Each structure stands twice: as C-alpha cells, then as structure tokens.
Image 1 (cartoon, rainbow, N blue to C red):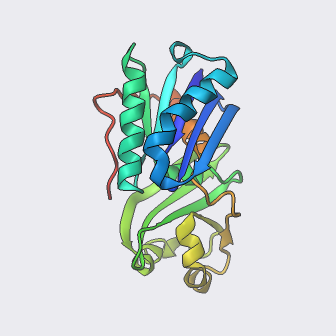
Image 2: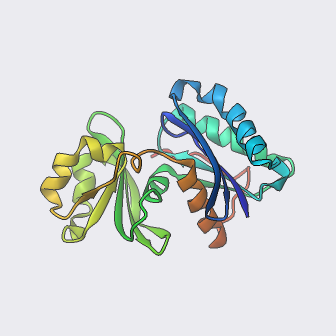
Image 3: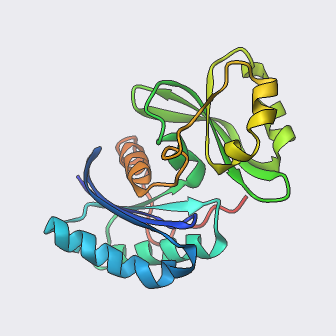
Length: 218
C-alpha cells in the first residue's frame, strides 16, 4: 500500500511517501508562514523524485490537529483535494498520536504540545510491537492538571515527547521519577509518523472520506 502523508500542524511542513510502514521518501521545511506556498510544490517534488503518480497512491494521510489553526486547515484542504479525483481513502491522525509514533520503544508515551500560557495539549498512549493505543481522552488544559490525570502511572516508566515536555521538564521530573524524555528529533512533528499511524489505523478498519475528514480542535 502506497501512502502519501503530510503534516502541517506545526512550524514544520513535512511530506512523506511510504510503502506500508517503510519510508520511500520524505521532505520537510521549518517555516510555518510558508506552508500555503510550499506544501503543493513539495508534494509534486516528492512524487516526481519517487517516480510515483497520484493515481498510484492508495491512502492519503494528514495530521488533523491539535496545533497551528492555519496549518491544520491547509493540510486537510490539500489532502481532500488530492484524494478527490478519483475518490481515495483518507485518514486524519491527531498530532498527539503522530508524536507518539516518533518513539520506537515499547511502553507508555505522553505527548505534550505547548499551547502557550502554561496550557498544553496532552495525550497518553501505550506502545506494543509498533501498535500505539490511546489511554483516555485527549486534553487541553494547564500542564499540572494534565500531569495529575496520569498519576495512576506514577511508578511506570513514561517517555514524554513534544515541545511541551521541553518547557515543563522540571515539573515532570518532580512528579515522575522514572520519566524519560524524547530526543530533539523525536520531539518534532513528522509526516512519516502520521503515515505509519494511518496505515495501522486503515488495517484496523478505520475508514474516512474527504467528506468526513475534519480538524481536531481541543
């Protein structure tokens, strides 16, 4: 299955081609203000480099948020346009789940995105053999409230990922003695992780259309 995946939910504009879980090609730039100008040319360039046409794409995937309001709308609109003729399956993946797929080791993963003014977007996941499952609902709240919701896992080893964990590392360490922290690269949004998550979701029976794909605003 060939997958075209994009992530425009942050300052990074990322485009990837995957064959199932294997990466064919990925390109990215880090400048949120140019997403609307750069995304479609990047998609065209990636397809040409890989010698793949849009008709050969079996699944279209994108990050649906939370994150940059404008970036999310650009990404979803672009994926809907590309998947419309002929109608192809699309899957939107939350930015929080995408970050969790950056972590390659099994265990608990807490994704934290900075929402400014001590507020964050938050999600807890568990990874088992490449499959990542959410635990509980996604949250949009102050960092302390979000951390308090996972105190039942206080004795567990949790890997924290996302720009929010960098900002609030001291608070996390104070509460979770076994906390681990993602590397600099793992903390970045990636269309590769969005594509992998979409492939697994599709194999599990998740199906969306260009009509049902909507942004996730918390």
